[in-house]
Image 1 (tube, rainbow, N blue to C red):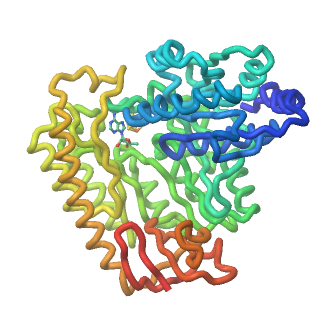
Image 2 (cartoon, rainbow, N blue to C red):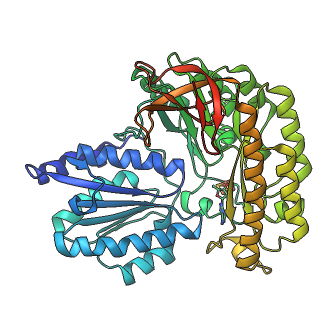
Image 3 (cartoon, rainbow, N blue to C red):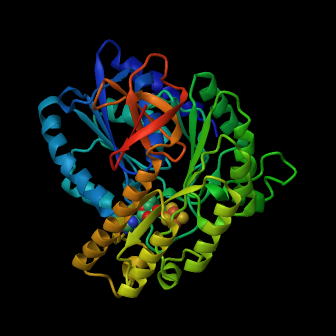
Length: 464
Ligand code: 5AD
Ligand code: SF4
């Protein structure tokens, strides 16, 4: 859906602020989808005449784009709000909060009760109302709450200011229908809905023309792209793009793009056509993120993941057989309700067997409104932390071992820019997403360069 009327407020706010130098600060929590939403918020704010600042004292407008997947993001928001309150009292800073956490009624209640100085509250389905909400809040000098409890539509045509100039994220679908029992996402992001293939292709082509080299396709469950639309009869298999596999093949043909990544797929939907598309498309990176969550079939069942330990291992085996140079990364949750020592050993067992390139590890966090929050047998914090530390130790040992194997090899590295910590160096990434730094040379940024790996340093490699 195009949103002409809402976007008219971009100019209305700009006119209202005319002549006054206005600055905004944005704080983004959570996943890459949220980061992509923030790029759109930045796009809207800059069209309204705001310029970006990293300095709270200079900001006339502070926007929080929140996450609620785990508890620590909540603690962070409420901590930061304390700081911002002082700014508001001194300078009249406008405070707006959006994102996933605002879709949770108990959080909005808490905000209204304990943080009444917040000016604008908007949700995941009302991102495109932000200019209008801001306009009304400034004009009426009042509080605006703009939340919808429905499955938002796909919004096209929002302005965007991107964080990088070499790599870009492109959201291909929104929402989730899987209802893993620990996860709040289906409640705050609504049901699955996919962007139209032509809109995605147009965005990627535009990025290619602007010189972007790497595209990351985003969605809560990318490999069910167009699944709902196929079931509804809105898309048929006769169309060139009717699935995630066919989308990958089409994007692979776009000239100028050198690398394609995607997050996150669901193991249960990892069909053969997707595996074959990854194999056949030379631009699709062979590092695949495959969230395991737990290695215990019993825990996986309670999580409603719809695969067993054996099915996950078989899928990995099949992928390894079919895709040369495959590497894998994963997400793991420790301390899910009723996870026994034996269950946890199953998780360690899968990690030992698969030897992931990267493991994102999480301590189970109770989320209000999810089935797992109501389960008996919640695991004491101390045990959760002990298990987390044991998993971390294993993962770090494996990464060190893997890093050793890179030393002496030649890796194709997409150079992303200057190293932030050392201006004498450039930084980039391998196909397997490992950070590589190398001595600075002119004309290398945005190019894929073969580098010889000379040393490894846990979180990065050094190349020449
Ligand atoms: N507690 C801990 N980790 C969680 N994740 C999702 N929900 C929770 C939760 N309640 C993790 C999963 C998911 C990643 C994005 O966050 O591993 O893949
Ligand atoms: Fe959450 Fe599961 Fe959906 Fe991922 S697939 S967003 S973990 S419910």
